[in-house]
Image 1 (tube, rainbow, N blue to C red):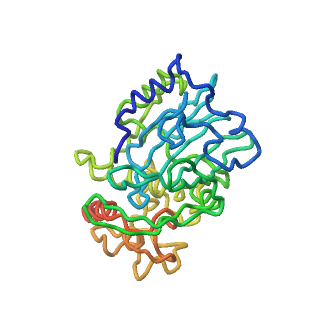
Image 2: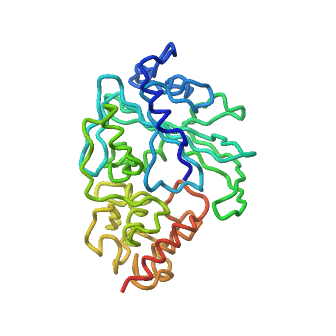
Image 3: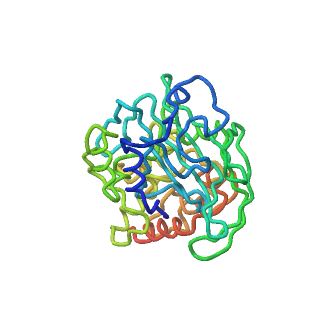
Length: 336
């Protein structure tokens, strides 16, 4: 996970009183009924290449990021002047109308980061709207792609293996598949329990971005934090990568498999749970999680598959997350 090395400096600049840029974020564009054709229409960034956040556009980092084919991600929160997000325990921050969440995806090319797409979540008066923007080769503009896109990419993964994939930019409807809660689009990443790394919550409160520092009962471990208990690391991974659909109000609620970090009932997280709506996704296996037998568990079977009718998650990846599968396999293997 490559965090923006100068995040603190960027935040300070973003909130600097003597910033000399002529125009801040275009609040009217965020709140409009239209679908802006260019990412630059919002003025989230001071530069054309999308690296210098504008005033009140604040970078942030998740403890445990969602896996997206090993893409690097650069995340930002925008809350309009005079407004604050509200803390909600260790759950999702409650962002006011006019807010935006911005997430850029890219890979390193010739030693430099190359952006492929930027996704925005806009909080308008009638709810949240998710839109994908694809960057041009010159890295000077990103254009709205409502129908999504496919981009050929070659990169080196963390193990040193070179990979070539057809990177998938989701279409507008696919964005809603993951971001749906009770059929309404909602953010899924900035939960307080997943924002504890590096004192970010304290910083957000000091900046006035949120009304107070949230009280966090469940802290999701940082990815790669080997000192954290295995169960916490595995449950954190499922919370981030699966629970946006697998929760009682999510698009996979009919499965009966609920993978939120705070879920306590063993059968609801899959232990000795028989599949309800898996179709051929269950293969020849009997339980979502078969304690002591990761290879006999539906969960591992689906995470290891690239078959569109079997693989989980259904969107967002075109390769297997080897490290994630290894983590969950170790967790299941130690169950009795």
